[in-house]
Length: 629
Image 1 (cartoon, rainbow, N blue to C red):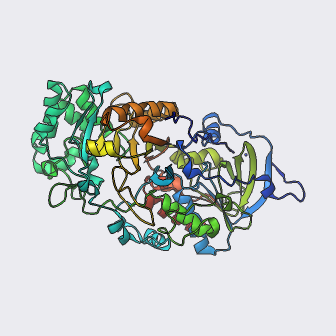
Image 2 (spheres, rainbow, N blue to C red):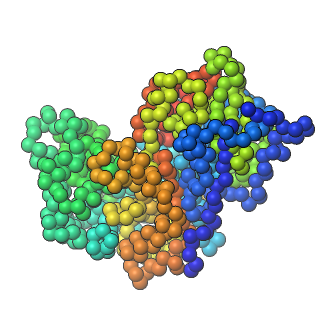
Image 3 (cartoon, rainbow, N blue to C red):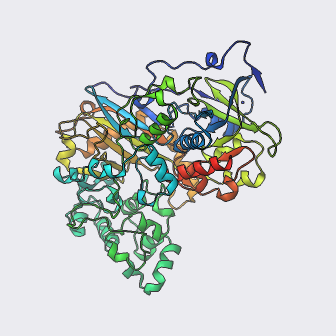
């Protein structure tokens, strides 16, 4: 098979702020180029997520302080609301605004990416005429029983039936195919390509129905390619617990909140083997977006790190709710009190698509979230002049400024770059639903205290890669439901969630095509360095990689992990989408000062609450809309 380094690879062309008006009798539609009929971003593969070109103008503004974008054309478009950012929060804000003020109110959503949804990215892979769906970011509802009324009502309005997931998620899939949590040690780091059928951590616990290991700690450790010293130290961690601290029970909860996990490993347990420390550092993966070297002991235990399983060895140190044993009553599969099963085949992209469908009914068929799972949207409907709500993609906002004094102005000018040209529109109000740390760079006259609060924010880099696999016979033969991979860029490889809904059927047999899901949380190279430094370094290194770098690493990774007789990379791999999010999980919070309304400008996005959850994105959208009332 030919190499796939160029397959459907698309370089985004994005853009972004004193404004000339359109020539007489010229409409803005004549300036905004019509999309090609074939324009359909979900089917694009290669580098996705924050794809190449999507942040160029934002970086020019933030990094280089660029303010001169050439002549700016005033499109003479006036909206009741302009939303900056077309992710879940921005789309929710647009929906809430029309629900509160009337469906006739005009809304423009601007986003710098080639697709809407933000981190809720839909990945489509087509193999032999069969479309496979995967999530490129925001993947599931987390503990929906805790949703606020605002979120519950929105989900209901979109036609999501929560009880439907009880049957849509095939909890018996892993047991039928004997797929379990394993650890893959690669030759490059550990000296030997070796699978051990034990995860050595509790990260896989969220995958409902995944088989747990049947090996004892001693049996599993003995099978690793670690040195004799490394094996002894790994076993020491696995058999550790609150008893080795030799503290009164009443002091344990405070101790684990005030002492470093790595101090516990290196000082209390005496761990110094590089391979074991590497395993320990990376086990949270995307649970928190940082390594355990910057976590306290309690945080590391709650994230399922080495030495956290079974729960009983830490039960007096952890508060109720901080940790749970992910095990079913038979003890053979992972299970949770509140199962992590509320998942569409494309993740929360189905929610983003449902919101767009509500805002622009003509975009595609289907009346609720389940009915649009297989719906192919017509992207030419997104920015039609007749729509009361419009979504304008490939448009980077670079300046948002009141038309006069912020306290008295009734309008806000919004300047954006599209196709390397500068344009301006006007809104009676603006919701900033973009990355919050970008706001000080594009809202130039923010109060100093608010600006400082927003600038303190950061976001950790994450990467979700979806792979279109011709068949999964090699996966079945290896018995892999999820592999923890401490030596690779992608620290986790696994089958996608077994969900069939809305006419979409999850893979049934190993002879069928499937989606392989790979996760990566890049870490800084200096263990124990300050978190912010590690985040910046990891982001820089991630963005320095090209698609070929990822393909080569995956070729080595999957080739070393899967049975040679059943797996050939060029034969089995049909497509790859590398969803790189240089700014993923929020790190820090702007607080009330950072998210406060500024004149006719309100602030949304889950960043505004220092969170990365779907429900927070929705709640912040609702707050922002109410503030503009």
